[in-house]
Length: 202
Ligand SMILES: [Zn+2]
Image (cartoon, rainbow, N blue to C red; front, side, top):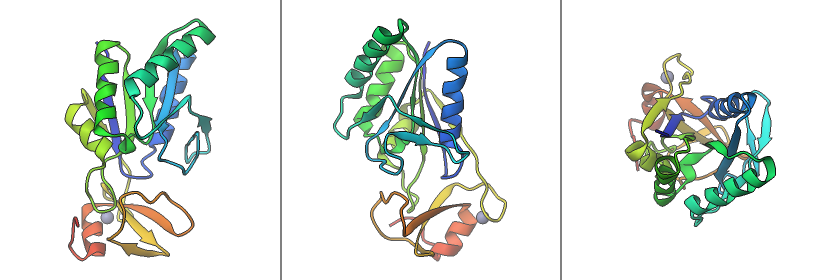
């Protein structure tokens, strides 16, 4: 019975590294994997970028309106044609940016097509609210697994504070990919509340 997995964590919890390691494990045993990520993440273009320095291109970018079930079916056909083997596992990076409907599609891939789908992503945004894809994954994934990272104080970090020009901000759009100005720090609840003045959401 194939499953839909959601492996979530705060930023810097090694999600992309874990994804690339999972891909390697499959391939080492002669299996084909399909790597995908939502198109909204422009940070690394078509690549999955791991902080440990390993980069790898994805097989397919998922557009905002894309029918993911159909998209994966097409990619499977293409990989099968090219390699003579079907896909053994679908791995999705930055899955917080998927829509709820696209996550539903992934459950169908796991359940109807019997292909495991492993999604990696951030649970909540900088205001501690769930991203659309993460919310749906928390609702319907067969398996939830937390990837842990440490706050500056040594406790487990669960939130992602946004800073602009070195100052924490608690207002703005949900999506602002790291750039020149914007950066994020993974914090525990206590440190987050201290920085936000006790405020958790909008
Ligand atoms: Zn802390």
